[in-house]
Amino acid sequence: MTLTLERPETSKVAKEPLRVCILDDDPAMVELLQEIMGQFGFGSCGTSDPQQALDEIGGPCRVVLCDVRMPAMDGFTFLEQALQRDPGTFIILMTGYYSIESAIEAIRRGAYDYLPKPIDRARLRKTLEDLSEQLQRRRRISGLDAQLLNDLEFHGIVGRSVGMLELFDLGRKVARHYTNVLITGATGTGKELIAHSLHQMSPVAGRRFAVCNCSAMVETLLESQLFGHVRGAFTGASDTRPGLFEYASGGTVFLDEVGETSLPMQAKLLRVIQNREIQRVGSPEVRPVDVRLIAATNRDLQAEVRAGRFREDLFYRLSTIQLRVPPLTERQDDVPLLVAFFLKKYSQLYQKQIRGLTHKAKAVLLRHTWPGNVRELENVIASATLLAAGDFVDVLDLPEHLQKPSGQPSTSELWRPLSLEEVRKQHIRRMLELCGGNRVRAAQLLGIGRTSLYRHLKRQCGGSARAEPGGSVRARPMVHAD
Image (cartoon, rainbow, N blue to C red):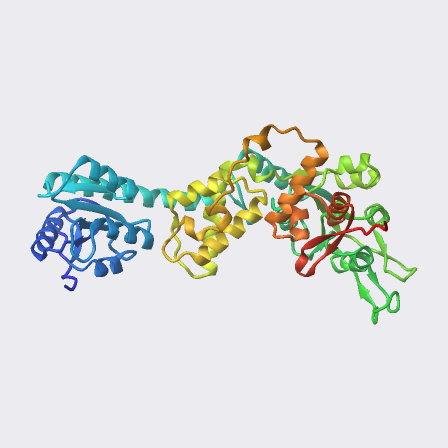
């Protein structure tokens, strides 16, 4: 049976009346219920074909009034398939075989209501009017959330937790006056975004913003990248090139993971800060530069100073102004806001109309500890937005490790005494397994440099750690002669 013509709305019960799809194997019942919908002031469409009703899911009809006993498809099967297509659809089941047990089962499976036949008009009207008010309330809340998201956005960063609001406030205060800033925080917290925001609010916002990841290059290449080189300075130097400090002179240079630099490189960075001058690799000429320097690290530089791995004078030069970006574990209130922000971002990018997450998906995201911080959350939402087939992101759209979280440790693991070295070994091993053997990703999540990770692996295996193609790492045991 094809869909019948839409009934006119004869009253104004709600400002934005519902549009209800009627599904029943009895055409007379479909016609009767459509007539009732018109009397209530709701638009409607009707059919006896469950597949046609499923095709309406996600369209103008947000509510389906469905019979339980139908020959082509029973109401519970329709309920399951409809919620899979669009978790935001409201299904009201009707039955001539009502019982408390079946009503509880229907609600448990996701039905909005479960009504006995013959239909009580007053109860049906009350149910639909309550649903209409609920939908209007959701629209208002959605509008307020969108406005809140705009109000709480700070140069591409969002947050409403106390820690983030304090960070935004301090950033506004220092942006126009700083020369050097040190940004600290765990990997994935958004240190580079903070650096960008400082530059955008500074008097040199119109000048260049140059970025250098100090942990991504060997020292000789890093020196050439920062200070430039002259032709013939080293093998492969076929021409003379300026470095980032010259390139961004008058603007800002952002040194990410500055804690990974060697002591000789730190001495050269100190000279840039103190004297505002550089020397290209292979050249005796001193060149003046005028840059604002922002450095970032996921290390405890004070501990590195005490251990002799970071120059104390450079630390104090960099940390005249210090901004700490809190990890996501300290700003759980920001998770829903970040989810909404990334959903909007990637819905526009992928040209999809994603309206939100299902309750189950929200619960999974709020339960996760987010060791990779905001970067991990963004990657999860980007992937889920791309995979989502309907208007809502569901649990099945999330990565597998979130769908099936690992079990709790056994009782023996909880109470068995371990040395600190054994705890360290287990943690590194589990992190490598989580990252699929990718040493770069594992080092980032552990908050250590790749060199430190190699050193730990070598000590654990009694040999050397050899990198495999694709960024993974394999321990190579030492061979001893008998």
